[in-house]
Length: 173
Image (tube, rainbow, N blue to C red; front, top):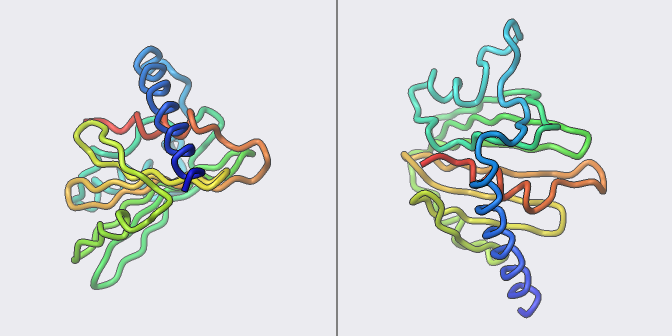
């Protein structure tokens, strides 16, 4: 229990530092490649393009990822109850996935049941943050879509909590 409390205090203090640092560097921070280059084989240039093409709102996607990450693929899955689209961004440090899930029933309760996470408010969105050592995940619900950002490390040189929080802080209003 004490470990969880200290983890929350550390993550919240980093969140404050991140808000201040992101506000000071704003959109001038070097950003990774959120889009495929012109002429690529992908049917969509970006995750935002894929959502828009399928008539879903892309307004609540992160607009920043660490500069060493590049888009690797966009994957779509659907059935009669859900539509999921995700983009994977890769670096030598690991894999960053951003997903959008559109479902016929509200499954937001799964985020609230995770006991290792906690909730922050950012741009009027409730964002649930989870971490266990090098793995990070954030989830939020907007415009009837559940969005998730997850990081999976490839090496001991993982992304930092500050970088992960900068991804979260880049979610527009």
